[in-house]
Length: 192
Image 1: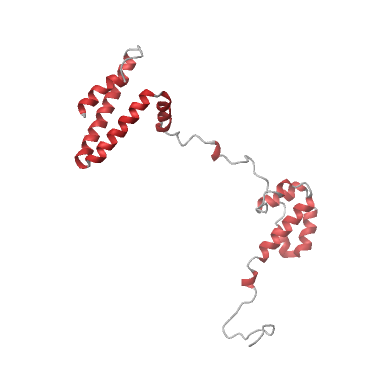
Image 2: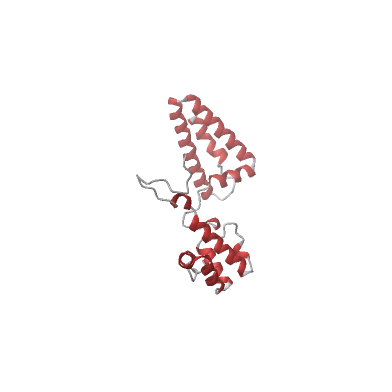
């Protein structure tokens, strides 16, 4: 195998460009790489001859086809090229919106806790559509991605009130009646 690898570089990386020294340097580098690959396959062959033979055949077929088909050679170059440095940001890593919305001017949960649904509705009616959208955005109330597109402020207010009410009462079935050992059953529960 070493004999083949010594003769292959001249055929594969020979001086066909007519440029002289640069092509000669490429040929020397290629020769060294082919020789290293051959030595690695021989070393592998000592412990696992079947795998070494399979790898040698696969590499031979791929190299022959890449030499014959420029399209495959380009595809291999692209696939085997070193990845971009991590400092280069890719478009998929950028946030979808460069600017975030401003925080809401009121906390709808605090208003709801203080004055209930009617008090929250009154406070929300005082706000502009953009201020309402800020609240929706800040508290993640646009689960279906529609509320930020609505033009009617009343519709956005209804969404805010609905989401606040839903979140405030979520889990109330578990918080409703604290029980302690020794408590007697409530009068409203049927007794057997």
